[in-house]
Image (cartoon, rainbow, N blue to C red; front, side, top):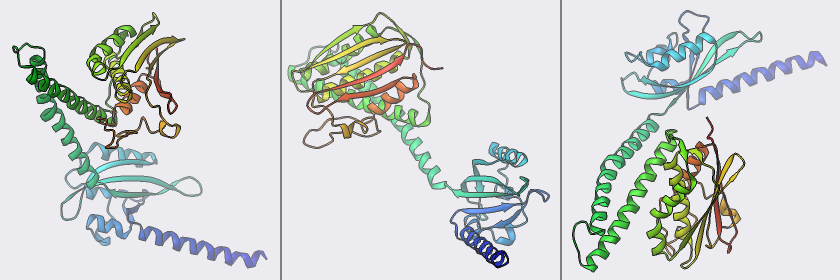
Length: 368
């Protein structure tokens, strides 16, 4: 039986090798295998996709080190990382500027990994190439868009808001009541647009991991009072009473501007979705080594299935035309990031028909 199984085992092994070879040959990613035992770690195999990606023929590829793809652009810091990984026999993923045979640039997302024999010795390296040029171009355009938003929109919007504010408060002289009403509407919309711009810019910082904190000793009562002052007109226009309950004498170490931003998002949302004549409570209490903030409204409440969607980017539970609620859909996502950067947690307790309580808990001392 053993002698009969031996050829069968060999046949299966050969079939497996054929399948693996066909898979590599058919792959749409460029794949190369190099031999570190030979001088200069040359390519000993390249699949057809690699030739298609680079424009080089098999004869021009095999026997050469992969650095021919960098041409004169050989001072990229990532190249040193690749050399180090090969010297140490370890895996690496990086992005390189590579050049096709016709000289055109393509951005190469390169993944390399060592291949070991039965004794654990590195006998080859396999490199998988992925052309991400389109993605890099998209990233560049997005960066240009954010730059435009920052410089070409935010600056003039700030000036418009400031000018309208001066007119609205009478600093530019008396104006007819009809004109004052129009100025007030324009001011409110300028502030809304500026908030949208700021949300977009914060979203960019959040996506790139550059939403930084400037921490200092913060008094909860001062922050809540400041927030309620800034939202007083919004609450008055909606006929909403906002009450604060500060049940702590402790302070905490936090970024006051960012915590103020979180509270503004939560309270403004509560005002937006609360019925006229209702009440909102902003409560703060200390719980051990943490501070608990809560914004409770008497609004329609939130279904259980919708709670997990609340803190997603660009998501609003009610975006219908029948009940338009202006906003970017970024406020809660940004608030979540800010709270988590402090080492805290954020959530909501709600039931349909029973209002909602949005809360967040911050450590008295943020995580290092």
